[in-house]
Structure formats: C-alpha cells, structure tokens
Image 1: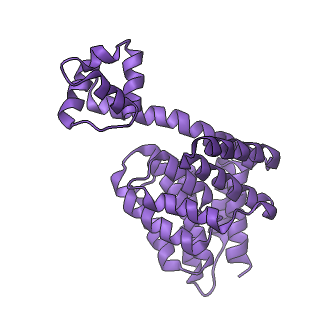
Image 2 (image 1 turned 180 degrees about the vertical axis):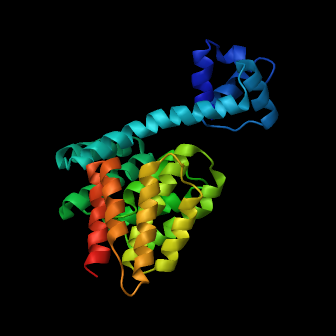
Length: 281
C-alpha cells in the first residue's frame, strides 16, 4: 500500500514534506512508502484526504495497477506456451532466475518454477525438482490471501503438479476466495476450479467434481459464455458416468460450441479430456 501511495503522491506532484505535514514525520512517511513500517488507520485516512482520494478509489487504483503489471508477465508466458515456444519460455525462466539470484525475492523464484512446470508439459526433460514444487506450494499455503499473482501462479500449475498436492491447494483456494469479490479474481478462480475438476474426474472423485462445479456456479459471469459451456460440459461428463447407456450427443454439441467460442489451445484441452475420460473408458 505504501508503494501505491508513493506512486499516487508523485502523480499529484506532492513532496514527502507536503504530504506528511501535520500528520506525522517526513521520515515516517518515507518508511511507510518503502514498506518498512505500518501506519494507523487514522493517519492513513488523513493521507487519503491529503491526496484528495477516497478509500474505494485508492483500492480500485491498486487493483488496476496490479492488473497491468502482473498480467503483462503472465500474458507473455501464456503466449509462448500456446505457441509451444520452448526457447522463449527458457528465456523467461532464465530472466526470473537471474532476478531471484540478484534480489532473493521469492516471487521471482515462484515465477521461474511455474515456467518450468509449463515447459515440462511440452518436454518432460524440463520437469522441475520436487523441492521446487514444494517451495511453490508452501509459498501459496503461507499467503493469508491470494491476490492476482497467487491466483495466476496456481491456475498455470494446477493441471501439472501432483494431483494430491493440487487437491490440498484447491481446498485452500476455496477457503481464501471468500475474501475476494473482484470480477477478474472470480474468473481466474472459476478457470482453476474447472481445471481441477478434470484432475478429480481422472481420479474418479466425482463427488469432489460436483463440489468444485457448485463453487464455479456461484462465481461465473453470465456473459462469459466459454466458461459457462465448459461448466456444462464437465457437468454432463459426470452425469454420463452414472448412466448405464450414455448418450454422447450433448457432449458433441457442447464441444462444437466450445470450438466456436474458444481459442484452439483451450478447446484441445477439453477435447482431449472428453476423449480420454469418456470415450475410451
């Protein structure tokens, strides 16, 4: 919060002295901006007044800044992954490793591990060590709340890490999601739960699948038609598992809709799932 306050202060052309005068010391405000100290709610409200900004506006500003900086990294990694571009993914991996070695900031290490997990799905020789995967999972378990960074890290790793570990982290995600009510967070959580439904379906844990889908039902944006039909597809798969003479017409129908609405790499995931989990069982 101190960092974002500093950005806003500079955008408004205010000095440390102008902002802190009458509230607390200039050194105290500097420490807050650098993340070296906390401040009381009363002083924080006075600072908001000094910047002429409301609390909801400040929080919205944080979310938007977080969105622009965090998604930039994940978008470029996603693009390279979709293209199967291992050399570019390795380049991004090395960049994050170098940042970690220079700063010892754990988020760089977590990002590099996530890239290795993605690389391993393209080429098994890049499989991350068990130590790295445990390090990533411990990082997620230790966060009091999952923000955009944590949600995207887990979403990109959930299908490729140990299924039992994935199940534990999903339990943590469901517990932590109660603290969030931001549309983009809900979308990412929905995508993660849908992917985790595939994991549990392959383990024949159909009751858990229904639990995940029930969580998704309350999070889905009515206008997100692709995820809406993925939800219906997975629900239909579970339903067919309990029928002695299943009719696959609706599955084909839903896959055709996804083919129209989604990107190729997304649709391939669900087509492969249906073929493996239903048609070959």
